[in-house]
Length: 405
Ligand SMILES: Cc1cc2nc3c(=O)[nH]c(=O)nc-3n(C[C@H](O)[C@H](O)[C@H](O)COP(=O)(O)OP(=O)(O)OC[C@H]3O[C@@H](n4cnc5c(N)ncnc54)[C@H](O)[C@@H]3O)c2cc1C
Image (cartoon, rainbow, N blue to C red; front, top):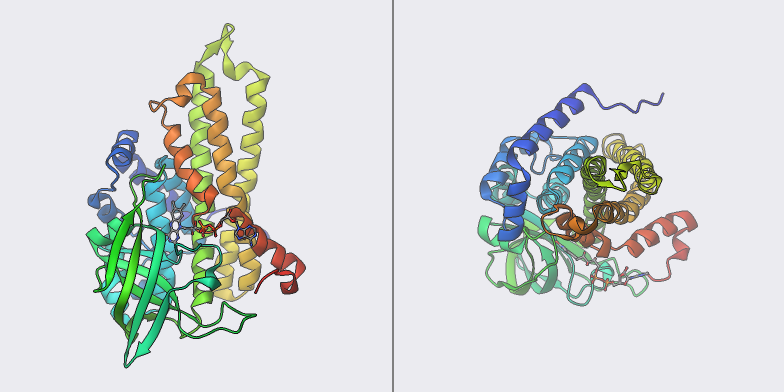
């Protein structure tokens, strides 16, 4: 039996988060956050009270145990409400990587970070990318060496979301580092995941980038110089960190797709209001087929993306709860969502801004914030489009078609 409806609980949840967004994220607030470059702490606290932060973590750990379909509902509504995309970014980074940390970490890490992150009183993010590159995870240079019951971390991480937030609120990152030499044909082996508190001795946040968009969340870089962390900060098994990193990327990518669905829906709503009002040649411009056809094309593709996204989130739930689909099958579907969604949302923003003529090019029009924000996912935050293509092609053709190991 195929049932495409949301449960009553999920519909109620959507109404509740929509109401929360209308109250807490009016356009003036988004503009204020975008210009000040900061998300107010009270917004995070309020999200924590609603049970929205790291919401897929199980109730026995203190989370709400939401499924991934429900998390996508939250992502879609946040993507609709915050046109700048900054808050959805912070929320989804925490939801996806916080979930992985919480799933594999010790009680100590849960107490020191995750339980605070549920309340908005700590930040948890991902620090995988290095200055030498982000796509080739297996080639990362950061190292971790076991000394007694501690690990000593060295290396440098770059283009990392939330460095300023982590410094201010406390918390830290899921960091991946090499712990064993790897066979030349399987470089992904021998890497381990760790929880790295940003305020640990030997961590120096030495960079804040001036991004073009999503201004209310920082992007920075940090060095790790002989940072000593207890073995209790190790996430998952020694030398198996690559797989946890892929799990985190999957979680983040499906939420990105849902954020982009919400963002594109918002742009179309703003656009439809505009083309019904704006007149040219004696009639609303919405009466011209040249505009109607683009609207219809965008709407049809949005519905297709929305279905793909929620179906994939449903598969992700089946994978986690029932083992119904393999991780690789789900990864391929998620890669398809991440491949399509940001470029599609970007195009919808661009189309609507062009319907708006000169007004669309001004900062009075809210959509320019969206265009700048969504671009981060087009260029590659949480994995570039070509990397999504390699994930899909690998599953279609077989592992022997990976041109590198
Ligand atoms: C705003 C923003 C926030 C970010 N936040 C984080 C964060 O919180 N944590 C974190 O760890 N990282 C973060 N990143 C980094 C992001 O994960 C990387 O940008 C991404 O993984 C790509 O790495 P790179 O930028 O080094 O590009 P590269 O890996 O150098 O790739 C450059 C180009 O080569 C292409 N390419 C690479 N390999 C292949 C291949 N095999 N086949 C075809 N083409 C290929 C890529 O698609 C890309 O177009 C963020 C990035 C941005 C823009």
